Each structure stands twice: as C-alpha cells, then as structure tokens.
Image (tube, rainbow, N blue to C red; front, side):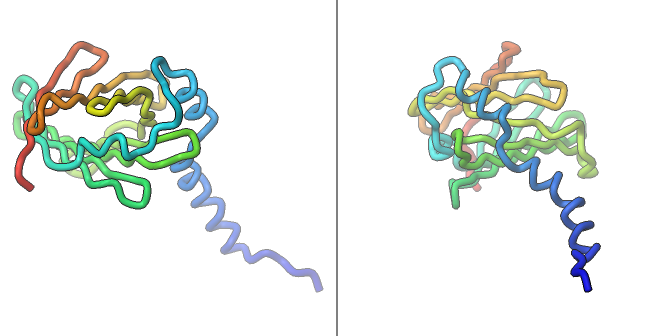
Length: 173
C-alpha cells in the first residue's frame, strides 16, 4: 500500500507558502542593500533604537503620530496614524533582522481597517548614530527614501525624497 501525503497538508502548504515568502528577504533585498549609496556593512535593526517611543507632529492640516516599539527578538514595529479632515489612515511597519541587514514590510489601512494599496518593502540603506535612511519600494517598484534624524532628545525630523520635512516631538505614552 502506497503512503499518500494528506491533502489537508498540501492545501495548508499552498495557502501559507506565499504568506511566509512575503516575510523573508529576497534577492532584490540583497541587491538593494549591497548597492545602496553610503552602505556600510550589514546594519542591525538596533540602529533604529532612537525611534523607540511615541512621537507627534503635523504636516499642513494632517496630524501625525508615530509609535515605535523597542527592539525585541531582532525586530521592532512602527505604527503611524495620520488624521486629516476626519479621515484616519494607519500604517504598520515591521522591521527585522535578516542575513543582509535590517529589512521590513509596511502596509497602510484606512479607518475601516481596509488595506490601502499593496505592502511595501522597506530596507535600511544608510545610517549614523542619530540618523537612518529607509528606502521604501512598493509593488510598482516606485522608490521613496525616508530619512529619520534626531534633532535633539525630544525632537525627530522625517524627510522624504519629495522635499517634505516633518518635525515630530516626543510625547508621553
């Protein structure tokens, strides 16, 4: 009698394989990190530690709040809430350790928790003691660089490759 692999196991594997693959580094991630300008060795997610805490600010009429968790088990989570004219958009970013350095995924949601667009890949491409450049690449291969920089112990600036600069102030949890 031949032994057959249970069909339930095959179904589970086919359903969850794409999900698991999204959370791992790809050849694209390796190439991006190794060829990024200013890239020096494989940075750990620990270089993002200065982001830990709750930050508030605004850009025009949009109120922005970001919360970053401490690094734990080689990963950290960032949560951004943007509120304008009664509309709220939330963005969740997970940064983690990989064999080619820190990398992650980011996803946006509207106030009904409906997904806005596709997830984006996030790569740490340049860093110093109080500054990091994160390159965000969406599924259309459009790239934007976000620079997080410490102004002082209670202020943080975020600059985009599009010329926008936002100042966030440390807030109580």
